[in-house]
Image (cartoon, rainbow, N blue to C red; front, side, top):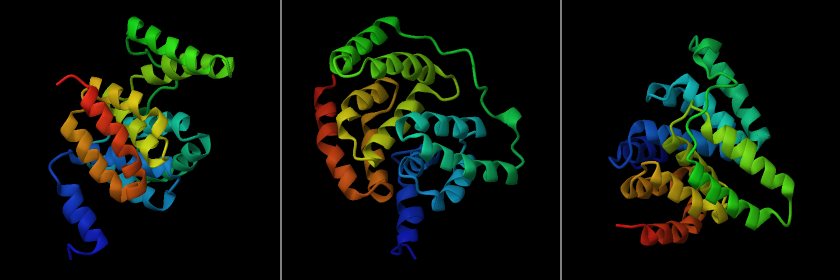
Amino acid sequence: MRNTPQGILLGDLWKRPGLSPRDRSVITVAVLIARNQPVEMPYHFNLALDNGVTPAELSEIITHLAFYSGWANATGAVAVAKQVFSARGIGADQLPEASATPLPLDEAADAERAKGVEQTVGAVSQGVVEYTNGVLFKDLWLRPGLAPRDRSLITVTSLISSGQVGQITYHFNRAMNAGLTKDQASEMLAHLTFYAGWPNVFSAVPVVKDVFEKRPS
């Protein structure tokens, strides 16, 4: 029945053309980890793998969200992923290396970003500045296990899912610079209404609207 919750989700939402099934899986997995909702993880981790997310990418999503939703949420997801990988015969040889050759760094853009971090945070915590400019953006964001668009997509998803609107402007622009289109961004919000809840999406809408209006046509 399409008018049941399950029918609306899998019969309507997941079949909308605005996002690929893979993108919908990436977004949904990120919501579940960010909100620490393990009950649905086995189904959606398996669905993500079926929809073209590789084991290495799923592993890297968890690693990325350890920084953006917290270590405890990530370790909870690790336990579920371990069971899913075992059941599917996925071994360590299919997962990302702990240390890998980093992606190229845009020195000019990163210098501007680092300047903003220093101006915003420096007077409060130099430790936050150090870890943000080092571990976060010189290590995590340059790991090759996820495409930059996917890293931005799961980061924006985590922020919206957690009601953290303050960081959305920067990361939404970063996502669109990495290739997320306006139509895809709009459809992401529609998808998140069901998985992150209407209040979180409505809180994000004014920020996203501002991003859309200020970006060049």
